[in-house]
Image (tube, rainbow, N blue to C red; front, side):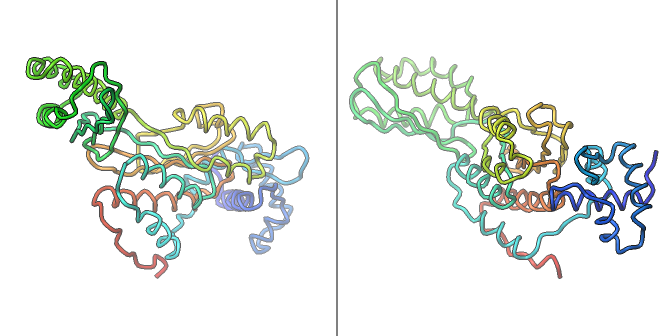
Length: 349
């Protein structure tokens, strides 16, 4: 059954009032919101129809109505007005993204914390790694005769390092020559090619240096394989405790545990710049009473990132979608050009 314009208007009022108050919405409040154009009796009849059609629910302890997941979906698809950021919000986002481009993981993790504080909901940042990620540069920093630190910069500017315990003593004076070999023979190639090339150079170095070379290459192959997988950073899970829906300690604990221990299972849709998943549309049972809004951005070099917000089904979808879009656009510019973001004109003018 197709809803009349009046039913849609009433549903819109219920959704937006419930977003603001977290309290069931009654016919008198709706009549006042609509300027008295429709009587309370007519509104009650329309509310009853919306409940019967599955767009609203009526808590047994209240005469008011609350939206159902089906009602939220219709609101997001048809009734929600696109919200534009104010100049102050735009400037705040741009200022938050004026961060030095260092290690990619640190930048993305920091951006997640900024988004969480901006939208007041738990936020996650997910990155999909390059399919053909390679090493750009190696360095070996001697610690003593039995250990050294391997430092590897990858093609996406991420830097990884690890302390290696050496099986045999190595003359530290020979380390520079080994670094040259690593940079000449083991950069800009795949992990599989690294392993094959290792045997080709075995006769060019002493047994002691070959063991160190082998350890370094093995570490590099593992890092590249791991870096090609999706990484998820979580921020602001404690924001849930501020929401009336999660005043129940058991309910809050269940969701916060999922966000902490199973964040890899958060939605990471591959289609479109923006995705909104409402209540049971989320596959994971831990998210059945929440909604997730996800925006995507380009990191460059065949890499893509996602910003996701987890909140109650009554979240302000228009505001969250606008702010995530602002952050996603800013991150695309930041990673794409590695330069200061340009000033924007006031969207309200």
